[in-house]
Length: 164
Image (cartoon, rainbow, N blue to C red; front, top):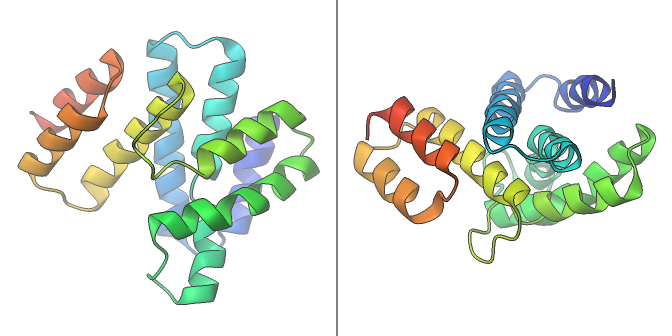
């Protein structure tokens, strides 16, 4: 029930921005799939899915501050956690879940020192969607998959989706 409420809240929050709404829905679907394939425990799966829905929540404030299309990954990492925390409190998410989700939002464009499968899978799911949405070249996809992807499920899905 909380995940549905969060999805509805995120759609309302990002209202009018269909591209970004579809982005976080796709990231969530792939994160959910990868988490299940990697056999995450229920708590970690819940945190992963929560983070997947909210990972780009900072874009709205970032663009309000810096202009449309001018919200870097680092700005998203800075702007996202406070907004996500407020939303998650309103929806009754437990404090330990909120804390980890905000950490993941605050690091989802940082690809070093990845600590935990929830973090790794969030990064992989976001890349899988961005590869397609950004029209990345096969060579760039292959290099990123080789350097960043660590889970068996993520590597397999990347190869299947993009024929690398």
